[in-house]
Length: 355
Ligand SMILES: O=C(O)CCC(=O)C(=O)O
Ligand SMILES: [Fe+2]
Image 1: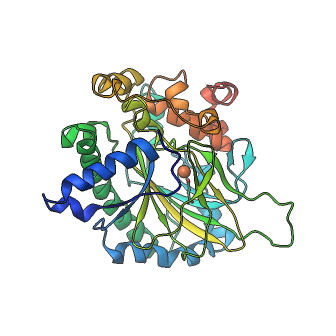
Image 2: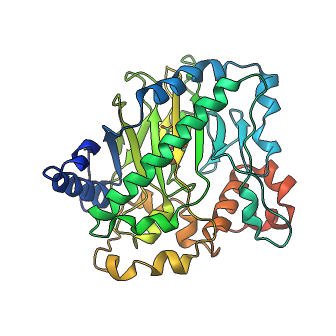
């Protein structure tokens, strides 16, 4: 990246529908991809009813009794799907102050001994009893975001001077969706950590499409620019925030960087909904790096702030050869109870290796 950006660009996807505006779209997208790594998409065609339907159920969902939340605890799922309470996740060695429900494209479990262990990441959601509205709302949202993600990938390919379908073969059958609640910080205790989620690059997917589901006065999300400054990512109604995940950085040989971001908790509670577009689990590093190496070799840049460089980029730097295994390691490290319970054969190794 060659600029220390201070604003996140807005990409108007309706410009793709008209041949006279499409070149402008592709050039602003190219700039956002190679120089910033974070962008908003507007006029994205995801129906307002689908987005609003999800936003509407968030407060009541997080107000459910503890007993109901615990009945679908993530720690009971070998697929890392379900509810996790405040304090159950760490980023950068510090506890994150957020609770979340994690869902994915609804799929059956197929893993059996003999298949790679990472195939066990695939499997069904846990749904709380008596909440049929939650299931239909989440499924409709995942369906729409899956479509948006595919359409967006074709535009990204064109913005990078590739043919539209170039990135489709890398996609997984499973995409993940998190419903996240950051409780308000108790104002009378300045000693308490502000970390909603610590500085990280998204490791769960290819691209992240994030809905900031609280009103514009609720701040929290920040992105790190190359000068090492944290830049606010304000709520822009009607948009999704889009950022690059680690696998995409690998496939583009570093031309498009996964950008470091964090959430600071504040005086207001905050809701957000990241959708992580999934990468094929059996994608090897050789395939990821090699497929478009010729194309991206010329674009390669390694300019990044020091803090950004220090963030764990497991797939790129790690010793695990497939995306699936790198993903499993990341999940086990973040959710150690699941690791101990479902993946004892690799647990010690995954938590003790430092990539
Ligand atoms: O809550 C947000 O705005 C961002 C969440 C995030 O970065 C993540 O879960 O990866
Ligand atoms: Fe993130």
